Length: 616
Image (cartoon, rainbow, N blue to C red; front, side, top):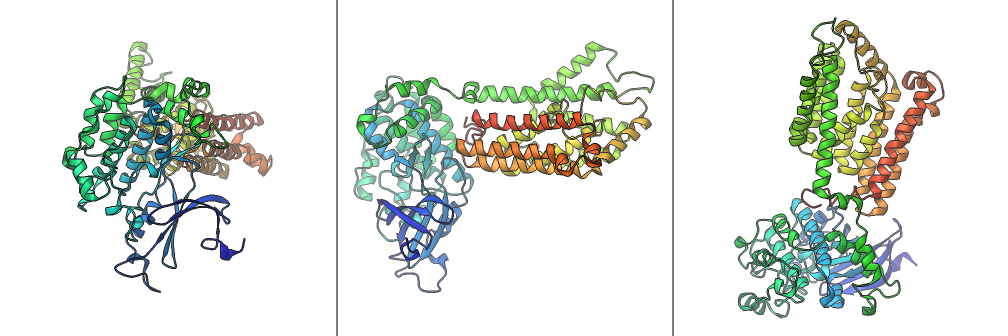
């Protein structure tokens, strides 16, 4: 195809996917990046009474700034906007292409066969998308079933964030930059809008799924819509279901209040109140995957829709491992591991804080009951107050380093921990879990596993920062005797010399050995890259990207262990890895970290939506 026949010189049209009042939607192929895209075109018929003149700034185009801002949104439940361009008085919005159906089509074909699990999944997904946009100070203002897309994997995505004003440029289409029946009263009156406007739209869509109809959508004009919203008697949703709690009605009608002051203050509050009355969202996603992907030739054929089918029943039986654990179980596990790690470090410190050089062991060790009570107390306190109590094991390590006059190691620990804790640790329980896990896992040669967890659980910035801290932390722990960032070897280095001067010399020598070996820095840098890249892949929100990201993470972590072999078997390998058996142990450690990454992706631990607070 000639470049003249392509859109913007690079997009090869495949088919016209839709036509609206704003323009057309073209399914196309990006010849540069080798991917399918959806291109929405908006003709600028009227901009302040005329078209955009040559050389005039594009800032004159109402809504273009909002569309460009929305292009920065990255979320698994939001259709990504790749680019916005203007050419010949036409705005081209290039979006992610989602193969599947719209919520309008789903409701039309399912009708009364839709169940609470499917509704729960759609509601949860749309809520997540809206909350992510609101967090970025972006309103949608045109949420409707046509803008909610369901992919072949059962994923639900919301399209057209930031495009409401742009789509209304040509004076056609939806009034007041919205759609009659799906916009609240204040939007029809063209009053200043806020997050509660999108809340109302979400509520009416949920109401339509529950009752099978939207009484406001029949209006043809704004006046009719206002009349319907003022005078219509709404069907009570719980009456339509045998297993729907009556409290659902109160929650939904509150969000549908004509006066925004009577609604929930945010979509997050609305989501929190309603989700507990709906079905199982995880099961709903599996059902949608079967429904949308069930017929390769025509997945909109009504004859293929059967919620009692064997495929649906099998899907309901298969629940992801992390969903079996649940949010509460995950929190208990994370806090428990963190508490154990903190208690373990405090026990190590108490073993080595001796009142006298003549003592074989440290404080409380001669009174086992007191020793175990202190260790247990640390575990409990960290379990309950994870974010702030994480200070305890690091404070204990700082005291141990100070007593043994290891000032350089103390400086590394205090500065790195202080910066990380203020910026990330005190704000993220997941990051704190990763850091404390590194202390525990590193004691037995598994530090890379904590790096993989950082990539799986944290966003790119936090994963990079936390893996950096894990690396510096590993340097400090390696100074206790192992001279390795992979393994601080608790069994061999459990007891430090009783004399502070001897211990100081030993710790300083070990630290210098680590810091003067460039392989230390190569290993830490590899870990940072591994966690960051893994997290970047996970942001995309698809299983394929998660798995690919985990494999990349595996490879980069493995490189950190085999790099000495690439440099040769000279003094580099000897100084950093010691004997060949230690080198093999480091490769095994790296492989273990890579396996943790792959398992995390396989069991959906990397699901970024699930990791949002309260959105398990």
